[in-house]
Length: 366
Ligand code: FES
Ligand SMILES: [Fe+2]
View 1: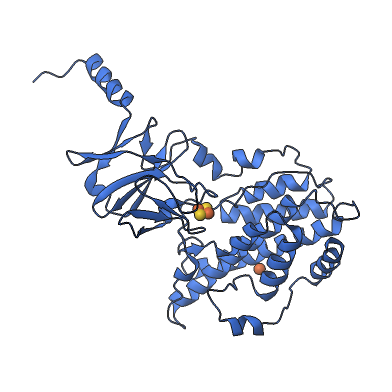
View 2 (view 1 turned 180 degrees about the horizontal axis):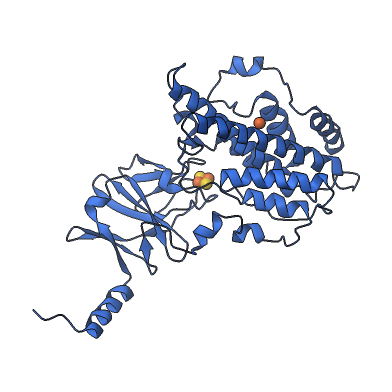
């Protein structure tokens, strides 16, 4: 049979594309409960399979952008299914994107035709990231978010925001150490002002699960040693971000006296960030020696919860994040210890200078 004329083929392609139905591949290919689909416009989707049916919704959680493709599918009491966000566990109904939290996620029509899955969306979809898409940029330090409101490389908040928007863990640690050197050498002159990201960036390839679901394995084995080191490396990553976040978020905070936070406040947190970056590098080195690397195992974002809860309150942030979590060990959260164990833990801050400064600041705040 003769081939169809090229104009006819491209005209037909155009008709299919304009209809808004995007073929994403053979049905058999989507056996996993959730598959992330990269949209050309950067607003990615997740294709969900539940009870033999396909659904699609935006992959970024409408709450604070959590990765819904890493969420769990649960059956609601009305027989419908929902996808639960791994960050703060809001659930989104697969049929209409509604949530008991009052938030609404965008859902898309899905159909299966002759063994192929089609999603109705105006944008082209791909199983792999698009080159130069918004998403790829957000994985780099040059993300749109990092540039928001900060232009001056001589300000500390420029670097804080840039590091918070850096998803690559090695790069985050490296930039932190460089910024500490610049600060110590007096090359960063201003504190500056910025709008930090709602949540620090993490690599898209990182598997994030709910805190209680991290497996520690049998003690004494290589696997359990790797799991422990990996979990500590995750804590160090969050510890780096917690220091930069308090710097960026409260840079222009005014004390009751009308004064700004003293320079020592920022120096202390730059030092803490630098120390945490050093710890991360040591742990990553050890992981590599044991044949692993950070990102090989799932991690949890539980440590960010308190930071998120205290994002608008410096006193709360100092008290809860830096004087409780930092003092007791960052990974201490309710899921791991009983109430009596938590009560028995003695505060042993690692940064006495910061701790003393924090205490005196708190007196001025209350
Ligand atoms: S980011 Fe999804 S529930 Fe908060
Ligand atoms: Fe540390």
